[in-house]
Amino acid sequence: MSLPKVVSREEWRAARIELLAEEKAMTRARDALNTKRRELPMVKVEKDYVFEGPDGKASLLDLFDGRRQLMVGHFMFNPTWEDGCPSCSAGADEMSDGLLEHLHARDTSFVYVSRAPLAKIEAYKARQGWTFPWYSSYGGDFNYDFHVTMDESVAPIEYNYRTPAEHEEAGTSGYLEGEQPIEEPGLSCFLRDGDTVFHTYSNYARGAEMTGGSYYFLDLTALGRQEDWEEPKGRATTARGAVPDFSS
Image (cartoon, rainbow, N blue to C red):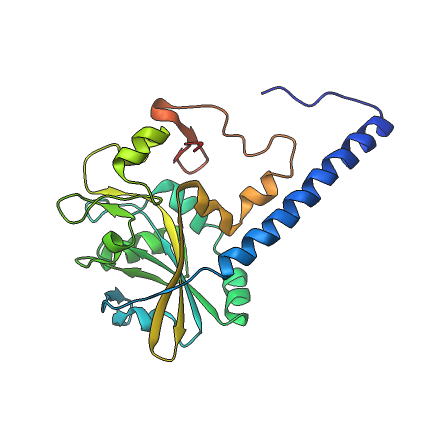
């Protein structure tokens, strides 16, 4: 990786001002996009999903923990695995008590949900030293309905709002490679009105990075995210493991 060229303070300032104009345009565009996201229509959740947590069985409404909004991190953890996904684990490492408190102050809960049985989730969570809420959807439809577990014997495959044929055309079919069921990451948001729950938003793949964290800080640095090197199948390596890197 080449380093930026060395210039005088005056040249640097001129270049910085030029870049600042683009940053401000990006900020305005992001604000406009956030407004459109808030204005998305929502869908009533009709199915009675059942999860398992440390306190026993829980409904989707229970996961709100009395708050108005709920964010669900779809953590990749196949029931046959002993450990959770390294990439998801890297993101979970940044899920601090302080971040959760800030969400709670805005009447919003955050939980992780995985398909692995609760015993495996609890064991892995303890080894990692995590304290955030994490529920099992083992044996249920939740992961399939929200398109983070793909198994054509269970439901038609769709990931990031693309069918397998559309992924093939877009050059992103790497998301669907491997033996089914295939686990992929995502984030889903819900809103409740009394006891009625609505699905308001989901993002997947690289879109899941929009939630923030260390990547936003790394984007401000000279070396960026430092994911220019590749392993087989186009996977860039982070400190915690391999991360899919599809540009479309």
